[in-house]
Image (cartoon, rainbow, N blue to C red; front, top):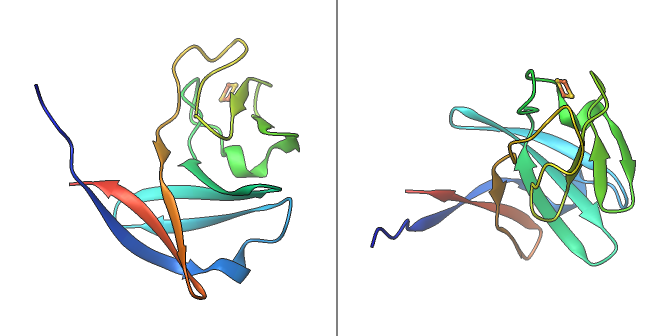
Length: 108
Ligand code: FES
């Protein structure tokens, strides 16, 4: 069995992400979109698995985001691809808030 360790990296301030909104952070070689829903922060890769659309520029509908390019929906909570034309989930990352800091967990 393979276990993937997670290391938490500070990406910015928790206040950088507006309530009900999203902010994109460049973290190492990833673009990570952090969403702030009513019950907390969620992070997914800012890259649609259909054709590379910038998900953070898409409309937020509850806990889903709609890709601005061809309209696929993804779960903000899990990264799951919910509608065509996307069929592959986007990567999802754990988020922690420590004081004012926003941290995202990356695989080691
Ligand atoms: S690039 Fe996102 S649905 Fe096509």
